Image (cartoon, rainbow, N blue to C red; front, side):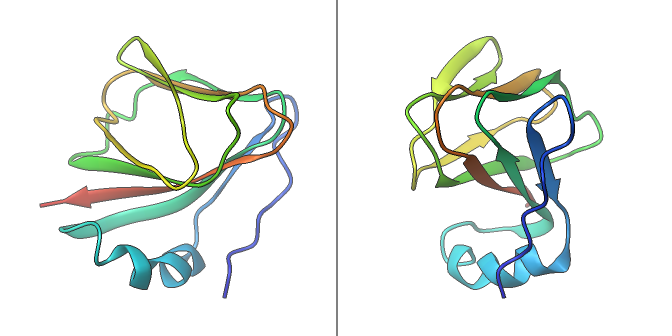
Length: 119
């Protein structure tokens, strides 16, 4: 079953879904695309005019994949000082220990499936 998408956190316009349903819903499809052991998987949703402030996830070791489930041309990801427009259907990889952030200036939500992989 599809995981529930909660309302955005007040004042920031984004929310994350951390539950077993995320892995159950997307795991079979992505298991063929991403090799390694999944340590963690969650959905990250940014509504119109929402943002995720610059931060580092120092406790994450390994690779992080961003699978773009839903996007708009006005959704951007900052990683290592470089802004990238995220395209629907694309898969991006990143080092989560490097400073990163996201914004959505579009009219529709931007939804990423975020997967932390070891190995």
